[in-house]
Image 1: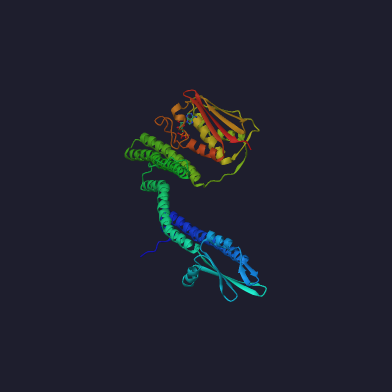
Image 2: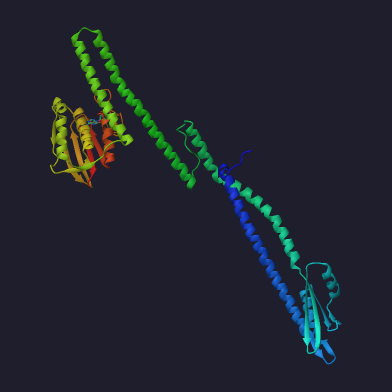
Length: 445
Ligand code: ADP
């Protein structure tokens, strides 16, 4: 047989046991206390009645010429009648009976045989004479207390049973939503990520827990879906150039035509470059996810940085005869990590060239507004369709996939990640065939 520990019991059972324990503790303190108080009050009042009666009996005893006599005995009899259960006998010093109250002979006999009787006596000395007062009283409150005790002892188990049943079902009803949360968790654990907690619309803590839980699962589900599509997109993007390289190499190996061999080798070179680009961008992103990057923000001269990127991209821009106008003020600085700022400018200006038109222009501006230093990169190229604008920062999203074999769809997601890291902002506006403007804001330090 295994012994259940506290943790093995369900919460509702624990609440019930706790409540029962508390009730028992209260009962075991309150009931003896209550009995003590009641019995003390009754005993005190009984004792004071006995004392008063004794005093009254004493005041009846007088000394006359013939010896001890009684006066005002009527008052004493009235008092005894009023109080009931009290009996008095008065004797002279030779124990000759001077007074015996109504029923006193029987009462004095009973009190010898039965419990619950209180006996008192007092000897009075008046000059040379003595008198003896004997009083017996029925301790009526003892039987009263006994009856009360029986009622209370019967009531305690009934109270405890009712309490146990009530708390068990109350706790069960209150914890019902938790059972729903548990069963939903199990369904999700089994793989159904679309399952959500339903029918808990209360505004209490459990309602809040259910809402937070649903939101948490949605966030995890979204990020899982993103990760899954990232992996499948990455493999797809890599598979295409690999297949092209395979086909080209097969063709080059089976032909004697030098021109075809050359063309195939050029394609292989182009696709290898593409694979290299994809891999290096994937590496940047994955280092970002894992937090494996150096981040050293420092004040950087924007004009200088842009100028050096224009130089790096010279070859690409001159192929399309695109003119890049660096109109950034010379003393403008931003606080950013140098390698990361370079990456942003390469990606954004590189895109402006990639999607720019032949003999086009690119303008780089900068200004400060609302506690941000804004860098504006504007081109007069192909523009971005409105339906694409909201997606261009997603990983592997490419505007026109058929036209755009050059792109990978990772450049702007890297830019977005870097900007978030700098607590910056990025905005884009575009008109098809007119051009695109990217606004990149760095917090002004
Ligand atoms: P890609 O490697 O495809 O350029 P990006 O993440 O850099 O990937 O850009 C995502 C998409 O945004 C591009 O495929 C392109 O459709 C669009 N885009 C980005 N910059 C520009 C631009 N200056 N002009 C036109 N389209 C752009």
